[in-house]
Image 1 (cartoon, helix red, strand yellow):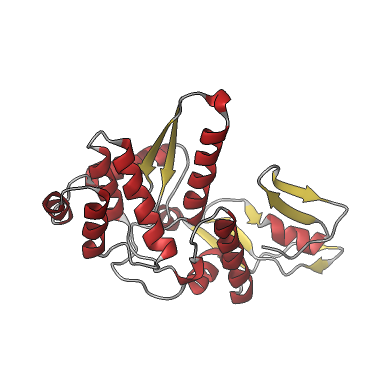
Image 2 (tube, one colour):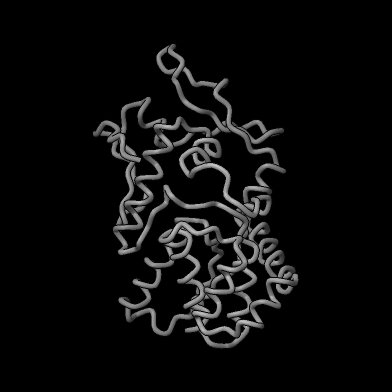
Length: 254
């Protein structure tokens, strides 16, 4: 069996999901031999070479949340990481462009040594979430590549060129064909949040943030926000995934 996943080193769910998936592969013998292939997903091609702002503020701006709500969400994601045994400091991450990390991964994958490629993947995730490093730092990437077993001069030549850039873009294009878009594409397509269109419940306007695709006729609301407004609980667990409990009030846990 071959499992292919699109992943970005700045995505917390990618890191947590990879750890969970590897646990399943290791502990479910019925799966047999499984090959796990990571494909590049450049989360935000417009991101800069240096971090600007903190995670909580970026989270609030991206999803149209209050700072308080964003802080709770970031903390909840961090707890998910710690629960998997990861050194996980999401609030302290330094968000930058990740193109070079994907190119470094492509170089490692080209060596035909899955263990080498996995060391690079693990080291990049840990540098971002465990050590709060800027992943656009070429010196850092060269250090990671060498420590994982790549040739230093080859990594240097990679980072001074555009090698594997086209392959990363092709990976992103394949994701787009499945309807998966990065932040840059969402901005181009016109995804936006607005607080002007609020639903009425019992003739009272509910304080919910609405999301709309520009040019489209559909309005979307976050399920958790609807639960708070209408009195039902939305939860998540590893065994059940996302679930709704209509006989329980919202737990206010993000």
